[in-house]
Image (spheres, rainbow, N blue to C red):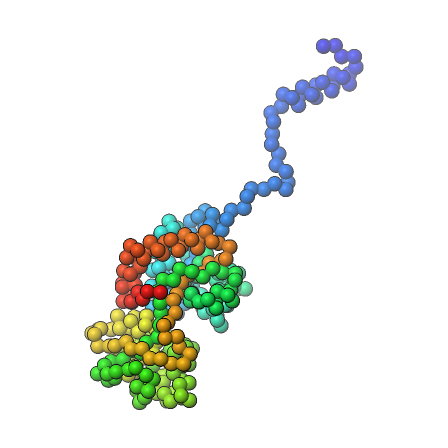
Length: 293
């Protein structure tokens, strides 16, 4: 080909260069990879972060690096079912459950701790669900309720609070059980009530023979009995008190409301543990009854 001008030759050279160059894709500055879902992020890191209460024996207790209890064992079992490693996030209870759900499930503590992927030991309660739309509460795994632990040789029969008159009574600090007994009939039993750090400590006052009765949760009573010798010496009885739910309350799990995929996976894992008998064995290994939720 003959060029009539230098500019024509130059233009053709540029065209030939462009046509012969390899095609390169340059991403638009506003185009990015699709954001991973919350569940995909958990799978990518290979770790399930589980929030458990501190100082909540027999469910979760002990130093952060060596937590123990039935909730800790359950967290390990759930993580295993999901083929994930477990990372515990132990935390101190807040003023109420709304605080705990905010700090450990959907927002995180203002000091930078949390949130976890899932929180264990959450009351499966309709009112609590309505008050906390940012979370999903599900997966009931046990029903807890209050009992009177007593030695039948000291107190043969308990059916009403009046049966406790004249008996030394151990209760847990800040618990609903303590409030209910202290206020019963204008303080009928108050002079005989002593407050202890937690319910297991209160129950141990009975198994050690220092107190006549303890009004605590069933799990706390059973943990104290399990740790004592001669487990057939003590009886668990029920009493009805104003402000106390006679049927008890179910405990379950909570995740962020937008992480339904994790909720489904955990619910399926819990169902598998229950159907295989693993959940029952887990509770029995801690000396506890697995009450149907």
